[in-house]
Each structure stands twice: as structure tokens, then as C-alpha cells.
Length: 311
Image 1: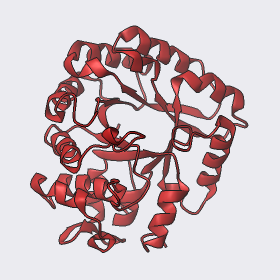
Image 2: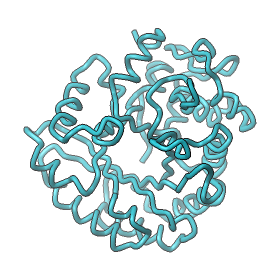
Image 3: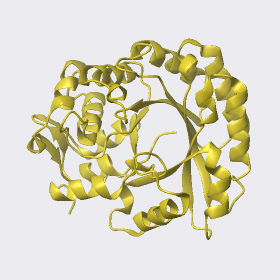
Image 4: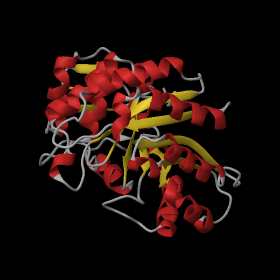
């Protein structure tokens, strides 16, 4: 499922629908009602176009249905959290059945699934079963599944290995189903935050295997500071690599950049130092560098405003 972003300007192409709303998750951990209210406010703000899907665990879908008021359109990314217990297909199917109970609600679209399945990195057959389960329920209409591999002070399996498994499964998936990777960029424990080198290895491997990816956790601010990754660092690195403005060897340098002045985000170009991309290049790259999940919408948007990158 390719994300369609604006080509009116390079800035718009980079930021269009970039931030998925993960307010239900730590550290914000909002209750369902205030999270839904905040999501509705974001959609009415001047920067509504930066916002993406509302992220909800499958285990809380009944609560979502009971809490939601009105029939305003809402696009959900569902985290298959029962599946986190293992890579058994039955847990995935149980979560998908929960989704079936809310898909009929007026205005509700479920267009994205996410899961962290520890054993799946070594089991292509399990991946194929999950793809088949989703495809059976979504024979038409765009839908995506994002797989997250385990990271704990290092990759459990090298990105080049598990992304090759995803790439092979992508080749066999139906055309309406996007199969992609999810990378966690932070967490409560220091070991959950990938090093610059390990994150760069993921971005480079995703590019070489032509696997779309999204990011989550820790990307609260645009530019790297105090050992925390910046979302401009991450996405400009990915977009510039995909667009041919940098080579893989330069990705760690982009991720390590701490000077906001090194980044360009304006209508004519986005870029890092001497690397520049125009709107159509950025839009094409966003089909592979898709989105980030953030428990705050206001924080990253306000930071961009303070940097003068949003008018």
C-alpha cells in the first residue's frame, strides 16, 4: 500500500501524513476517551495534514468501539498484541477476528496491522500464513502489515537476514497488501534504543531489499539530542538514500547529526548538508519511508515550528 503524499512542495511531501497517533502507548498512555478527543482536535488543526492513523492495540478494540462517539472518519493501525506472545498463527487470527467486529462501524477504516513476532524472523512459513490470513479478510482494498523484529542492545537477527525474509514474502503477497518492516527507535530501557550503527544497518538493508518501513518509539523531536534519535535524521536519511542523494555509507552521519541547521525542509527542497531532493523525489521515497508512530502529535509539530520549518 503506497502512501500517496502531496507533490506540491518538498516540505509537504516529507511531512504529509508522517505522524501516526500512538497516544494510547507509553509514555503518554492516555485513556481511550482523551486519546480519541485529542485525535479529533489534531484533525481540525492547521497541521492536520501531518497526522496519520490512530494506533490501537487489538486487545482494546472493543473499548474503542464502546468509547467512540459519532461517525467521523477514522483510519486505524491495529497492533496485533496477542501475537506478541509468539509466532503462532492462531494468536494472529484471534486478533484479526477482533478487528472483524469493528470493521462494520460507520466511518471506521482498518488499513494497517503491526506486530512483533520474535520467532518469525526465522520462519518464512509463519509469515506466509499471516499474509494469507490478512489477504483472506482483505481480498480488495489497500491494507498493510508491518513486522517488527526484536532489538535488545543489538539485533536478535541481522536486519539483512529478516528483511530478506520480508522481501521474499512481499513477492508472493497479493498486490493490495503491503508487507513492510517496523523499527523501534527508543523505549523505556536503554537497550531498546538502537545505536546509530544498528539503525543505519536497518535503513540500508530495507533500501537494498526494497522493503517499505515505518518507525516507532523515541522519535519525539526532529533532531538528534542526548542520545535520542531525531525523526528528521531518520526520515531524511531514508528518503535521501532512496532518492540517490546519499550512499549507504553516509546514513550513520545523517543519523548522528545534532545541528538543526544541517537540515533543509522547505517548499523547494529537503536535504542534509549538500544533499538535496525535490518534491517528486521525496514523494517517491515516502512510498518506502512511510510513517512514524508518536505518543504526542503536538510535541513534534511544535518543535518543527520552533525550527522555522512550519509556517
